Length: 298
Picture 1 (spheres, one colour):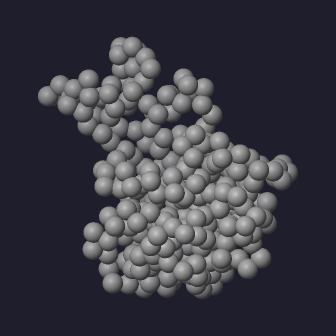
Picture 2 (cartoon, rainbow, N blue to C red):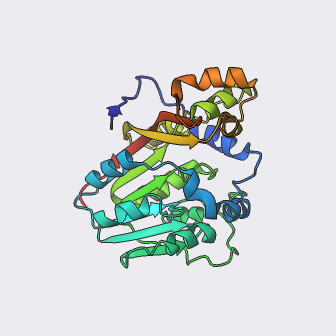
């Protein structure tokens, strides 16, 4: 595992980072900033989600160390428990929060420990209700959460010693309200996990060839926290992903690069190891950006 601290450059924080975030979210063609559309997406993906995600052993180990002394953990956007479950042994009380009943059903199917509460509720409802001075997600914000969604818990949630939000803010237009809510829910530690659009080599190249800008969500989250007067510690934790393919056709089908096969293989070559059976091992590293705020003693 490698971690590195990234200090903020000495330049004024752009005040419009919240507008930039909102514009990026509302520009997503899938419309997943609408809660019902995001729930529909996870309805189709929940059963196969875990199989397509890399393990994050280095990130989990780092988080477990930082949770020392904390009595409670709230995982906002917990999904199938990808991080919630391996972290649950570090604290006495865990709340797994998500607005997708399908993702939480997968988590429940894994037999979580008795001290882990599974809570199905709109993220925007929780984050705004935690701030009595925040905006009303059903009133002033036309893109707020759906108060009539089925199977949602009442919108009250007590603060926890530590709050984790891993890749769970991407479709919330009101970033200021979301971060304010997270800060109010975190008695001691707030952990935000994101990336800056650099993941697998083939996806990064596809975006470049298509002229798609990188999301750079981690950088915007860092700027947003500075704008709120809450400068975070910023680290990058290196993880490794490895896939195996029985043949070249399977590899190229996974990569889906808009290039002739020979050119695609040439690009992927630094990350490939040929197997004796004619297959391929495809291995690369990627960085998890961690923004950590220590707010005081629990």
